[in-house]
Length: 288
Image (cartoon, rainbow, N blue to C red; front, side, top):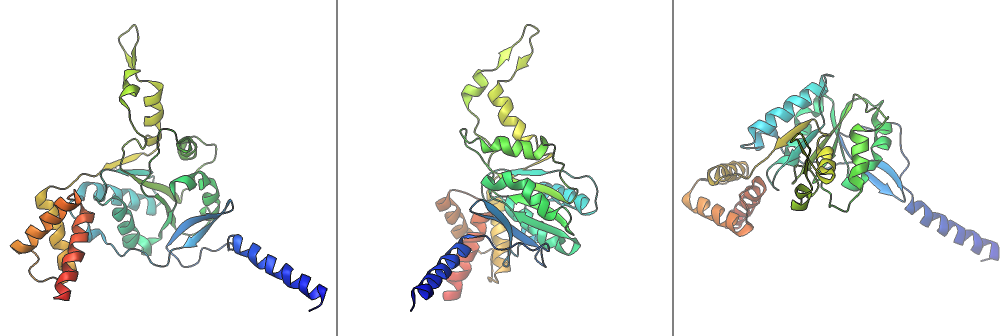
């Protein structure tokens, strides 16, 4: 190999490695996908289609009738071009918050509903995401699962600005749905309330720390709360999933006892724990 051939070979190898570090080229069309995930590499972001999406349905979501009805109504308003709100779904883990958003996509995808999943730290890229979808057909839900900030995390201020404090107007075809274990998204400390003050007229003024924390969640017009299930409702959910998995006699005393033991072991009577038990029981039964 001549020196020139060697140089060309090394240059080609270097270009190959550089291309691997770059994000894929973006097309002006989003294609036929119904859901995407916002990806970033080397400071550049793009929408990556999600090819395998959860098959959960609204009928699978037991005992969350109030938040399900409210979020479905808000979503239908959005699909029909009527005014609708950004939504915050908050409550304990495993109670159906993210499952509800996914089930809505499955229910209304044929009516033009689309979903973009965004990690918390990437929400500051919302203006860029808006540029991708502002003129695209369909109605887009930007979905951020498990949204929370610690008290030293300053990115929530950027999210506040994007949600309701920026001169950039949100397009009519985009809403934000977020889930969180915390109602106000950031930790609440006793010392924050100790800084509250009374003025000469007897009015109570919250501390700046409390105001700062509450102001973020107030950017979401629709708040929906989720709660842990009692024993009876937990067992109803277990029965539903066992039936879906084809288990014979899903309400037998042995099944109920094992389901309660499973919940005790996992420290929760949530819908997620119920589904996990059903999978375990159905798998064990299949092996027998």
